[in-house]
Image (tube, rainbow, N blue to C red; front, side, top):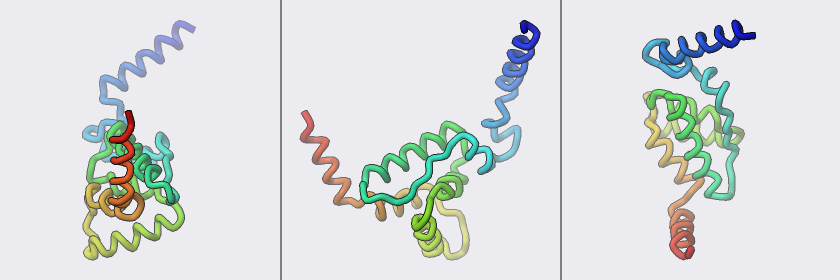
Length: 134
């Protein structure tokens, strides 16, 4: 039992010392979608509740940061989590934003996502609601 515990401790120590290959993109190549999906399964399937959309964006950003996904892959990984009609919405929106097939920055995706699911009027209403809390 002690030998197994020591071997496990050494293996974990080696992972930490080597940068934990699952998270260190410099030593082991880029993060793959498969690796990301093993840890994070937060999908989005539209909503009529604007705060649900905001919560999804916030949770996705936390997951992408926590797993040290390079920013140039955020849109690819995030939009993979869109389900149903939302996938079709993004495919159409991406074609309009980048007809040449260039990568769309996360900030642009987030702005378009909020336009569709968390409008300015909904955001303003939530802000007023928060300001009235005592």
